[in-house]
Every structure is written in C-alpha cells, then in structure tokens.
Length: 264
Length: 157
Image (cartoon, rainbow over all chains, first blue to last red; front, side, top):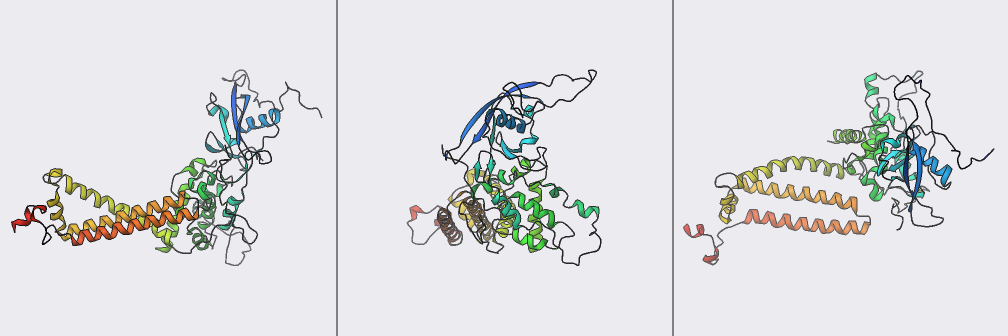
C-alpha cells in the first residue's frame, strides 16, 4: 500500500456525472474554510484549546468531510466518533457554530464560510478526548425509562395487531437515533446532569403511547420524579437540535399531560 | 483556560457498580403540583393584577386619586381585602416557586442550593405574614395617635 503524497487527496470530492445539456452542470465550486476544532487531551494537558485548520473544500462537502480532511491530511490525532456518516447511526453529534448538529448532515456551503467554523463536543457530558464524550450518563437515563416493550398478556401466536391510528400516535418518537443532540442542548441538563433529558423522555413517549405496551403507568411514575418532565422549561433547544426533526418539546408536553390526566 | 465543559453528575454516585446514578427520587407529586400551580396562578394573577391596575389608575380621577385615603377606603371594603390578599399570596407563591426552580437549575453545590432556598423561604414567610396582617388589621385612624399625623377624614366623624 502506498501512502498518499502531499498533492494527492486521501478522498477526492464526490462528483456526479451530468451531461453538458443539463443546466448548472460542470465543476463543483470549491472554497477555502477555516475549521476551528476544540481540542482536549487529558494525557498532555488538562486545558482545552482551539486548533485551526485551513482547508479547501467543495460545495458537496459536509462538516464531517472537513473533519476527515483535517484528520487524514493535517493532524491524525484529531478524535471524533462517526460510524455510518449518513445521518442514521447518530455517532457524530457535535456543536457546530454553537448549535448541536450531526456533522454528516451539515453542508459546509450552508454555513458562513467567511468566518471560522467552530466544532466542539456536545455540552454537558464529560469530555474524554477532543470531540468524544462519555455517553454513559445519557444512556443511564435511557435505560431508566425501560425502552422495551412490556406486555402482560400471553405471548400471541401471531404479531400484536395495531390500527394505523394507534401507530400514528407515537410515530414521531420512533425516529430517535440516540445521538444525544437534544439532551446535550438542554440548559437544564447542562447544570448538573441529573435531569432525565429530552432523549429519555422521547423514548419513554414511544412506549407510553404504544397501544401494545402495558407499562405506561410505570414509565409515567418514573418521569414524575423531581428530575423528570417537570424540569423541562420548554426552551425548544431540543426540537431545534434534533437531526431527525422529532417534535421533542411537544412529546415532553404530551408526557406531562399524560401524568396530569392520570393523577388529577 | 481550564477545561470549561463540566462533567455533569460529577458526584459519581456509584451504586451497585453503576456510575452516574441519579439521586433518589422522593416519590411525591410535589413537582407536578408546583408545575400546575404556576400555570393556574399565572392565569388568575393576570385577571387580578390588570383589574387592580385598572381600578387604581384608570377609574374616576385615575392616578391622581391614589393617596393614603384611597388605600384606606379600599381596605375598608371586604371585597378589596380578599382581592388584595389573593393577589399577595398568589404572587408571592408564584414568584417563590419561580425563584426556587431557578435556584435548582443554577446552583451546582447542594449546600449553596439549600441555603439559597432557605433565605428565599424565610423572605417569603416574612412578606406573606406581614402583608396579611396589614390587609386585615389596617386601621387608618388608630385611637390615641397624634392628630397631626392622621389624615383629615379621621377627625370628620
């Protein structure tokens, strides 16, 4: 295997072959960007700092491509998580220009390329290295709401039937990919991390409103905790952050109403 | 600059080998009642406060009429006594609960949180007791007071 030389890019920009007759075809525009990455490596220093990378990127590139370019061609020690790179696995949630986004879903051309593009780890979770955070508190909350089907009736020989209206009731919250963009955008979660957080509530919502599930009351009881839904201040940061477009704040409000209608 | 992104649950409540446990819940409905109270008292306060402002500042001579005698006149009427009492209690409890949630959200140490809340509750109790006493025991013409300190209408009777 040959190592790429300086001029050779590790991954050339993707191009779509279009016939000459199609309007707008031709060279994909390229531009210079400054990628400003929050660096932290506890093995060398307890202090975090910013690193700038000057990169030539293309109109089809995403923030993730810029991070790849920085890691593959400039500094191999830049650390971040990414798996599928297509907005489904939820590994690469990060704070891009101060907003929680998936790096694989933000096109560079949609950002202001005249200014440095800042990339930080998601807030409120312990940083391990660079953009990698310890997701354990996040998954702890997720486990606590019991994200699995619980049904008291006998196991049927066929599938458990459900009308399309019953399915529609929780359709929005089935889309969650557990990227933690919502929970780590929540100011209440930032303070002490005790709040269950939007993602756990969204995943509880998915089962609470599922007609096949019998443990809705248990989950509502869990979320009636002092760290539960009542700590939500409806700032809508979570709805803005969700890469799947889930109406997170609305789901939290529906859980609040379910608790109220059960108790009052 | 030090690492500014603080790890949450830095208490590391290790229980049964699991890190980052949530501090145990109380199992009460207190937070739910608090949440509900904020919404209901808010709606009631909107009516109470705007009628209060309208009656004091717009009706009759408007703001020019507000003086010691005006307040004394209002508090001679049980209707306005109850009105002002409801306004005092709802506004104080609404405000106290609001500040309580802010303290819960922003104080990071348990000790700080506890003492800030104690100061808040003490202030609330003092204002509620004092305010309630004033509304019900208010006497514009206390007997035995020096005549020049009293408003003119006291000598009229």
